[in-house]
Every structure is written in C-alpha cells, then in structure tokens.
Image 1: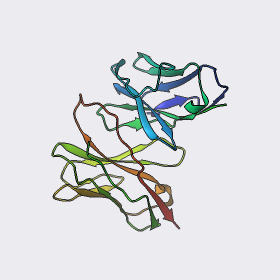
Image 2: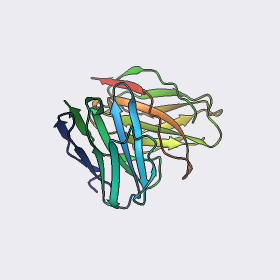
Image 3: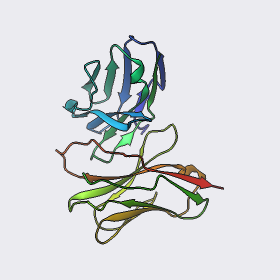
Length: 112
Length: 113
C-alpha cells in the first residue's frame, strides 16, 4: 500500500485566496483525521471522520475552514479566505483502530 | 487524559540502545501508553503501545513500570535514521472518546556517529 497520500506537498498563496488540501487515506481505513502543526502550538487535531461522516470538528479554528469526505478514498480541507496565520504544515492521517494512526507526509502551506 | 513528562532532548551513539523515558504519574487504569515519532519534514509515525505488560515489535520495546507511573521506549540498536522527535501519549482506548491525541513537545533524540 502506498500509505496516506497528500497533495500538494507545498502550497504558496496570497492572503484572501482559497486553498484546497487533498488527502487519500489507506484503503480499508474508515477513520480519517486532519491535523495542523505549527512551532507555537504543535500538532492540533482539526477534524476527524468515521465512515465518511464528520464526528468531531471542534478543532476547526473558524468558519473559514471546512472539510469534506465525499467517499471513502478522498477528503479535502478548504480554507477560504486564507490568512497568513494559517501558515502551517497540514497532516492527514487514517486509521482502522484509533488512536493507532498512519500519517501522510503533510502539506506545507505558506500564506503571504 | 493523563499528562506526560519527557526530557526535551537526548543523545545516543549509533549502535547503542536508546532509552527514552516518559513519566505519566496520573495515568488511570484504562489508559494506554502510545509512542509516536516524527522524523524531520515527515508525518508522525506510530511506534508501539501498551497497557501494563511490556511490549516488543520490530521497531522498539516498551517497558511499563509495575505501578504504570512511567515507561521507557527502547530502540535496541539506534541508527542515524532514528534521529527524530519521540512523543509519549497516554490515551483511553475507547471508540467513542474522541481522538485528539495530545502530542506535547516530545523528546528530540539525536543519534550521533
């Protein structure tokens, strides 16, 4: 298996633009997680899905952030409009038996 | 979840055993100890977990004290590729408890030639 696949690997955008991050979980994993990592706050859970249904989105910082999982093999995290303080590494992870998670390589987001 | 305390950094010579301690003195009876590591520029990687018995897999061994107030992750023969930040996490393993793993700051392990 190729593991959790995230795209793009790097994203540079200007403040106010829409940003979409993508994730393909490991086949057969019915849990999917979105995390954000910054130097100041470390790794933070934003939202997680079980069987494509959002279970806990209490970590989503504000309404500018939204996440979807239209099917078992794809999820997106969207930021609209983006702000410089959204600059971080965004990780997607999937799992069969949480909290044993398998993480992707992350998307490095820079908002100028 | 119980809080964990780890040293901020450690060094280890290549080929020697790396012993990474973790204190979790407030752990409760149904909380597991999980270890993850994060190599620079990569996502965190699951290593091992345990409840009260010692555990071993192809990556490492986990030694949990009898009172469960502390544990040690052992990398038996550290290599340069083991240089990473190691996170000790205590978590209740229930399906409906939520999964906001608190990674904390971890221990930065440097393996030297």
